Image 1 (tube, rainbow, N blue to C red):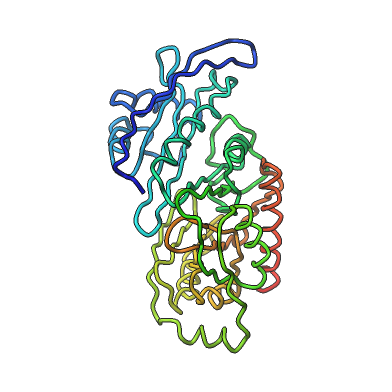
Image 2: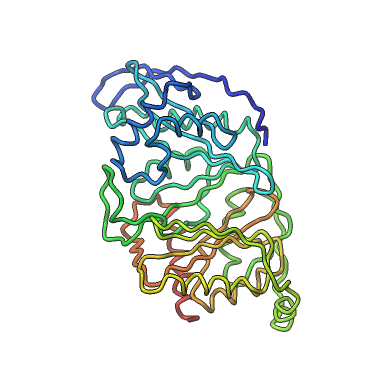
Length: 360
């Protein structure tokens, strides 16, 4: 990824609201002094419930915007900051860029500004040449899914149970879900070959559909027989290297496998046991599908209640598959607001969920 890419592009555009009002908007990179406007945008929409707590502190906003981890962009109109979008930058082995946190002032939402900001930032994102663009699209409204889909981003799965519904405060209708989820969308940029991937039998049709829609090269390894899967299990290193992030506020644990080991299912069971009787906890683990170990880890994780929640393709050196544990959490995914493309993926994931329940 070109982390040294100097972002100086500005874009001035005239938009007309559904009520026939015409306004001029300037989309540009962050400037020192935008902090209070950004905080006001977040507070207007989410009150104090937004999960990125830095966005309530002007000094932290400035620190993040000037750091190597983020790029901030704003839309300006009538002399005020009225729109926000950021890039979350991942580099190294997982070389991808995540456009995120698009939030607009309520009085400027009927102008097509969301699409205009994506058009402006999408060009910049591609110029930075990451392996892929990656988006977490919320499921309580459709605009992010729709706009990103229009730009060629492909739904590949979900991060289930990301947000406690009872803690959410925004202007959108929230249904009968214990927790809301995020849809995952991918757009390949500089990486167009997934290499050889090892996909468990019941996930193969799903994986072929996703990689086909991404329009990239890949080779799916033949399925091993039972004897070979047992041999793979026996040959796994005893200890893994995994990165665990536990969000106590939203009750979600995110696990990234850096190197696989036979202890992974046991570690996941320890996390599950640590929840005790506290409800609404979920776990998402990202397994590497460029390794044969995924065959036995998939089986062993299913045995303790995990199921496939989608793919994380083209995002770096290792192709990945998500598995999810939701316990007794009632996701009630039929309440989600989804595009047709995401509804199809939802049905696929719910099918994996049912297979996981049968396996318990």
